[in-house]
Image (tube, rainbow, N blue to C red; front, top):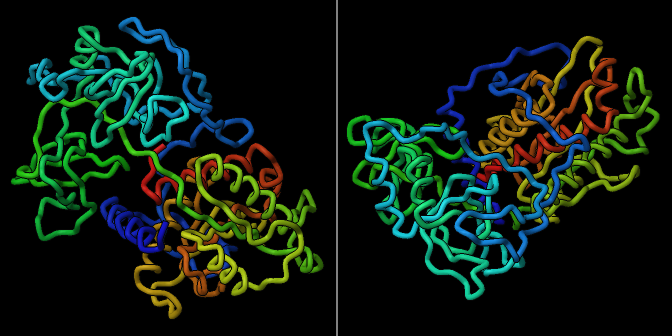
Amino acid sequence: MSKKFTVRRALLALSVLAALGLTACKNQNGTEGPMGSSVERTTAPAKEPMDGTADLPIGETEDPTVNGTAQDNETNAEQIAPETEVPETAVPLFHDASSVLDHYPRVFVVTEREFVYVRTAPQSAGKIIGVIPQYGGGTILQNSVDAKWVEVQSGTLRGYVSAGYITTGDAGKEIAQKYARERVRVTADAAYIMMTADESGTKLDTVFSGNVYDYLGEEGDFYEVLLPNGVNGYILKRSCEQGLFLMEARAQEMNGVTVVLNAFGCEEDAATAMTGTVSGEPAYKINLTVAARVKKELESRGYTVFMVRKGGSCSLDGKGRAEASNDYGANVMISIKCARSDNVTTEGISTYSVSEDNEHQSKAQIDAGGVLSYVVSERVENATGTKCIGRNRSDSFDELNFSEATAVILEIGYLSNESEDRKLNDEMYQGQIANGVANGLDTYFGFKR
């Protein structure tokens, strides 16, 4: 993925953050560098797997039973929750529920799994191009010869789904009418999602014909819609149609993103390295262990990941590490770092990105760093339950100054705090950090899991 794509995504996300009306979280003593703006946690800690890693999907059975309703024959350990919880009676009372069928001539609905994959070919080896959540659906185009796969159109995606996990025919129509929701579908070849109901305002995104969004209301010539990342936006009424639609496929393409991880410190600095107040474990070892867990989690999600430091030894200074990241062609560089404070009660996570007047980077790079700092810290905060105490701007780190990729430093906790020292040496907690970092990158690059 090119740097241009990274910056475009980051600028979109920056606009989104502005729409959220960020508030500052409380600063605490003992953090390194100037404290910047930050936000309070807005969601509850995520429930994480015990080993801190996501199970990989291992494909769909190619021999499902097809008898009107599907049989649960898929072997798939990955549990991706539906994008939204659908109430038992989701159809607004002022609509004729049967109108949903106007949009889907041969309707199908996902009923037997929390999601199904859309593939490029009618076989489990086909490349995954998207997912359709439970009670989502679309239109059947044709069945495969053996009736095990169905070619479908769902939203903007056209591909194949396993026939055993969908309901069709009259039963499918009944389910579609029950779970359809008020949405708007883009009818123009292209349209803008605006931050406000103003054609001259800030653009959040460019959308294309066939995209469907939850309907929230109307304001003048605009519909207010809910974007997949949970942010409200506005789209001109003349660019879309309003009505009852099913949830539809969302693209799932995570390959092509290169992440470089930098574990701070090295064994050459062991004599001066900070160590855990309880564990006695040096920071450079903990940093490397956590970075390795992050690498494993990211690779399980399809990212290409490189480590600046793979073992205890490393002769590179901060600039050298940034240049190594550049050589890898990174889209993003994340440095993992333990912190310390003279105040033994100080605890929490924090992030660093370059200042707004950094002389080494462009305005777009600076803005992108701020966005990445926000989404990574917010997701790690949610995953671990550990509060963010600062999203900082600093030009003190050459790892940030000389990185051509969007770069942040993630401080994962304080070794000077007994409780955090214990947590940072706990495998389960390290796994939660890894999941949080991966969730943050999914958000940054526009992937919703």
